[in-house]
Length: 244
Image (cartoon, rainbow, N blue to C red):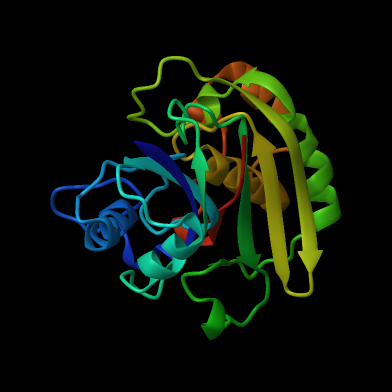
């Protein structure tokens, strides 16, 4: 038996997230189709995260076990030949049998992309969020530092989440402007349902004056979702890095 780790990337525009669903097309389903074509068996694939509908991934890790002896270096090309063009296997390597892409993950980095200009960019449609009001990236980056540390992030978790322990540790949070694009880059040991999208929405509400500057710490302490900002659309969110 072999345990194979795949690093993949995908455009989530046409998918209802990573995890297999009964009545919707997902990334996991398409990857399992390709694995079945190459390995002759529909293997159970373990993902590092559960990305939502419309969310993208520059780096997503998953693993599966197989008894087939296909050379590791040939696996990406074989799988890519059986995958749609919006999903790509970047690499494959063999791992210890007890490795698990989700449970062995030490941290993740997400990037949220905003097209910050009066006129929308047709080449960024569904790949970023068009926000036409002026953004001061330097100010927002300073505000975002209040998220850093270990906190109960109940105020930044969407209603309906079944997770009881909402304590997470944020390692870094930076807001960077590159021309007309603004990137919100956040890393941590884990994230709650819609957490990054609510964080970004809160920063945008600070920018617009709907939420007072310097109050993110108070919002975290309140554990009250109603005090945090809106949930930005999924289209601008990317799982950017996974750490083991």
